[in-house]
Amino acid sequence: MMKLYWAPRTRSLRALWVLEEGVPYERVRLDLSAGEQKSPAFRAINPMAKVTALTDGTLAVAESGAICAYVAEAHPEAGLAPPVGDPARGRYLQWPFFSPGCVEPAYLTKSANVQVRPEAAGFGEFDRVFDVLEGAVAKSPLSAWRAVLGGRRHDRVRSPFRNRYL
Image 1 (tube, one colour):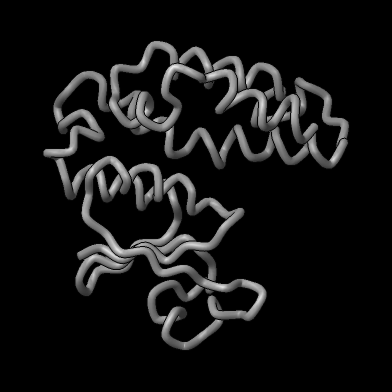
Image 2 (cartoon, rainbow, N blue to C red):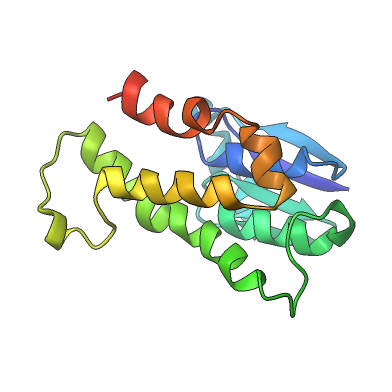
């Protein structure tokens, strides 16, 4: 059985969402303030001593995007990803990289009130990043998007970043 090593307020939420799509797993919550992620046992799973990490038997996978992709491929019956050879697979593979490459830098610069000229921001402008994300979610046939965000894309994607925290 897969074990997900997670902590609140981390990228663990992505992996938890994917695993909740019907893949059997065990949660192992780490107390970051107590330094549990720095233990020798956890460093054997992820030498970077960071959550999120997943074990599946003797295999260890770190980084939430990689975990999501691994879970989808390890459990094709869950319908979390287009199969290899499906024309939709390329777009599917884009999203595990879009979040750390575009969403997070846009969110962090906005929340830290750092001014970045739009043409100098390799990750994109905040509004554009979230408009692209919302547009993709609205058109996506993948069950994981629908299950995670339901019919309330605005509440789940845009509002927490834009209206509540910024």
